[in-house]
Length: 505
Image (cartoon, rainbow, N blue to C red; front, side, top):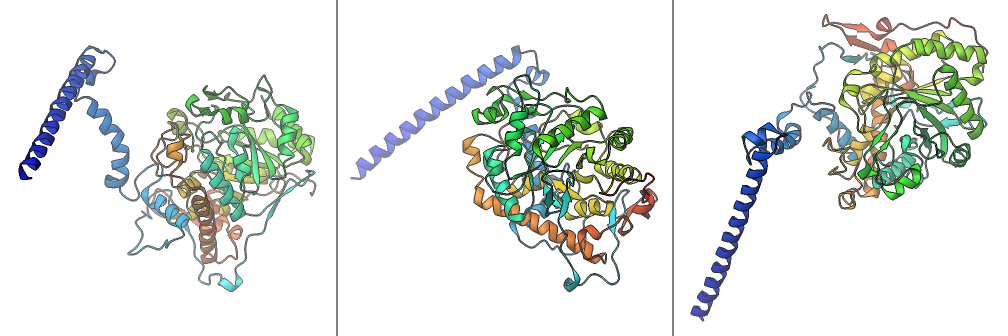
């Protein structure tokens, strides 16, 4: 029996040795082939000078994104979102403790630091109230009574996976906030939660386009007639790429997405950098009123601010036509990136960030007597309560977040949104990767993230002595200047007086 076992063991060892030699031989052949290819190619100097081992440089470069995030970056130094910011969003989404010990890791003396001014007699819980719904579109056939001051910013089905959109839609419905479709058209997944939807029309008119890429009134009427569609947003520009249209690589244009957008499947979906029908503020108001006449819903536009001259021209044209011609809302996006693919020169160098553009818009509308007529919505890296509280204190009616809700879905900031290889299933159409995103579980996380952020904004408001978040004003905030000392926000951006008499709504 022992000799039989020894014979079996010997046979196994022989096979192992054979496979080892075979594998080693194949490896040597592969190395030799790669060596020859590297030495003869002329595109990459590293590979030509250091064949075979030069490939490790690109591998390490790729792994560096992950090692920096988990091992080397400090809690407050990473971009676009640092670990402290992401961790708050993760904990809020999981509905676990968001308290920390031993003091803040945030530098409270650097220029631009925002600080809220606590009141010596904070609002007691028994005196706190919830923010009231806000009416948008008083001249519309179907105005919208928006319940939440914090909502989901535009992310299209295409940029996001269908399971991600489904989770967002279901979570938004439970939270009582709206979800913006992004420029990719209205999909069944946006409607799957049963909640409020804002339909966005981008420069390519996806979902409501005709054969020439212009606006199809019949398709617009069909989309806007859906009871879940509460408002329509005309996108002029977004923070990731002001002056350039949306970019969806062909590998992400599935048959379903192509059908929703009315474009060919498998081909790059690249929107024009502007609306061909809109060359000036008069054209813009014409388009807004045309869409509003057809839909009966509130209509506004989304843009990145570059100069206030545009705003003054817009207000002048509104005064000429009358307040009913005005957009029902303006969505201001911050020029520091977004959830989709974009050229680096645009999100690094073009447009104003929300900290500068939001007060410009609010001040111009106030001086022009249109602040009550036009609601102001803002977005831009508002994934934590402080950013939303700042926006409300500045005077915004609503704040939006895209990437905050992506973190709620499980996004790990892998920076692969445009490659169809998202490891968490949020921005990929690979069925195997999508399996990791379980819709019912992530919908709950979306709900918890919204609930806990709204609660935390309320906590800041109560500390400042006001009853609810929209009670926050500019004088409740100070900003650290280059001297190292802080200055009241209302001195940096003074309150404006209405200088133009207008008719009451």
